[in-house]
Image (cartoon, rainbow, N blue to C red; front, side, top):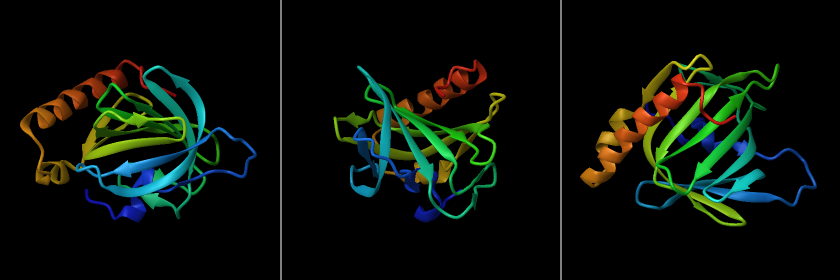
Length: 172
């Protein structure tokens, strides 16, 4: 399903009011490394090869067909500099319950003290709290001009995420 930029979950975050100085800007890049959009996030944790961030959905409620993102839903986002995906754990604004994980197939992120940059490769996976998964935007992915090794890596990554989902190992 192709979504307008205003409907794509990771394009629509904002920070709650806070005096926290531990903020970064997330830059969503297309497959050629061109900036598509950016948003602020708060750093929750850093490790040698990943960063975990918090951001909030800041658009009108958006029904993607497999999940509804509501204004104020909490996103805990994990970006890796050594993996071909990022993972957003999505929590409901009303009851705080985990809705599921929105996973982007992408090149490994560039993580610095003040920014996270990630080249999105169009494929998305939604994983429910029960571990069921669905793949989205295959047509967009197929239309990209990517080297064969990147295509192969993307599909290997889809399999890896599905295994993480069924084993209950996706980050919260």
